[in-house]
Image (cartoon, rainbow, N blue to C red; front, side, top):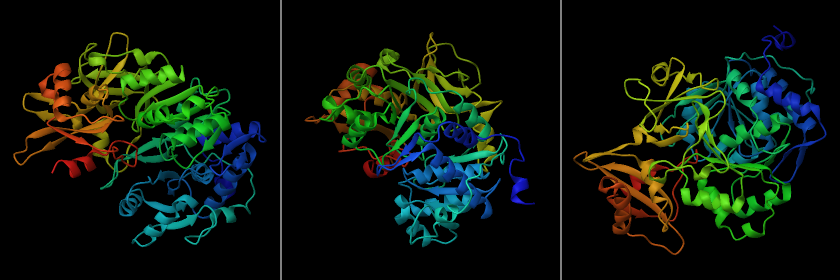
Length: 514
């Protein structure tokens, strides 16, 4: 069957086609500004996607195939993902900070047939080339590592095409974890993703100008899609540096960005903040880890009504949002709420027997929405455990209040079983972050030779502070009881993070609990 007959066979328009349609409405406007300052117009971005999509089709990429991206925060990363999805393939992003052997195992597990590499990840590509079983590799630009697929694509016509996927086809496999073994692969479908893009992000700007200063392989990539889908633009930085982010917001008139709480704190503490013009900024989306109530209140005071917290999982996409002014909404012990359910999302808190619990009672948070995953890649048993009757069993412990605000206590599997009861690390972290001598923290459990668990607190002290174990234990005991008081305190200059930007508690446990 010829390519011309294949094109358009499903009759479904994917999220990529929807984005390209928006780009075509005003092709001369700026769509992407690279970290090097190159401005790419909407029409040029659209044409690059069509050309590369056609090139990938001729190279055997199509429906049911897997293309893996080893890319940084580059325009080529966006073009490659859009082109691969347009051609019908599912995409898999390899996370920075993951070792080359784990990357190789991930690619093998998802049946990868093509690896695309941009200029930011050439060194890692060379490491991969030394390993057996690596799939065919192509470069997104000039390189001595592999052939330049963009050069070949530039000779293709920019004629539009699409309709090569169905709503139930996977647009990506998004992995969780992955520092040592093969992480879980979460299958997200074109249909659910397109539905999520149809819900515009509030207060993101009109049109939005999104600053991607964290990895496009994670949430920044999804928010970039949303900005383009809303007729806006994306400004790329290769990584987060507080001074650079502040300067970019002022220079590029950024309206929206995404930050982990720890990165937001760096902005708040930077000496350039008072002199930076942030009047263009209408939204900072934050989330991913526990936020300090005191620091978020300070952020709201300094930055104004721009803070929007998101809670979600890769299995569910976004679940709740907490908007400006809701940083004052707290639950037991002063814990911040993660907000109320987003439109189209249902939340239930249930006990082990599957019974709905009344407001205030803790149980597992379960979610039903049009945006949930299609299951785990090649793990039907795990899929059956987590996705039951349309409800995702998140594994998070939480409770709802009378007004529908959700509070997350912790992950079920992270619960520390100590003599006398249970300690939820996230709950203890929330409390520790309210201590004036503590800037950041991570709590984990460690078993001794007799399999008894002990509570460890790893702390980044506030400037000029050096809290002691006795001081921290007294602080926790007075507010939460002796059960939660940590038995060990580790002062560190920084909390190590996983490739997904979460505290690496596995690494902390291996280094500090010996």
